Image (tube, rainbow, N blue to C red; front, side, top):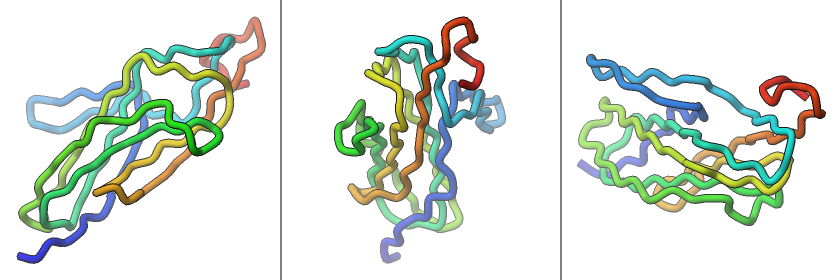
Length: 139
């Protein structure tokens, strides 16, 4: 069968991922913003979960987090190689990022690449919270 590039069915940012005995994934704490009272901020962990469909062939996924300048990289994942033998089979990839250091507030960007071509880019807002307000509360 000729290679077919897969479609990115989903890409989400969350606090944690668990897997049930039946193989289903549980995504915990989906978010699009981080609030903090001081900078630089060391963020303990976050996960990017992607789901690919309708593809055939061998592919490589990478995910990177960009600073607000949209050029410099906070971190980049190791390549994830995956095989799709049937266009009806889905592939779920889970990438964990640990002890990330964000230098300042501002909109950062999550990019998911397939074979070095960007498939999606979405914002991760980092905002300062005024003193006295809990860090989880909106600014």
